[in-house]
Image (cartoon, rainbow, N blue to C red; front, side, top):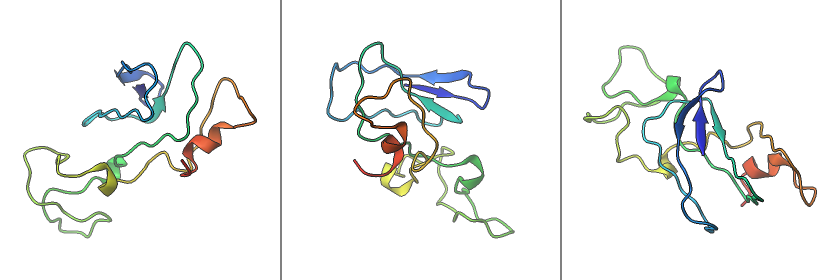
Length: 118
């Protein structure tokens, strides 16, 4: 799994160590990127790709702001992205976004990986 910036340069990589898990979860912490690339050298079948996080302009503020923001302030924290936020409290950024794949099997297009239906 690679996270890429706007120019499609890799900013962070993690490798799956289990050969065929039912569910694979990767935690990237505070990595900033624009794209997620999933690459395997053999056959891969995906039911759904979910990417949880924030758009940079939607990150909750640590303290109240003078002007209203679209996202509420959080209680003060040591980090920019408090670990108390779970994936369920962050939006799925991949949902209904454009998706591509190199090969299609069983008439299953890449759009099915981001349709919200696992």
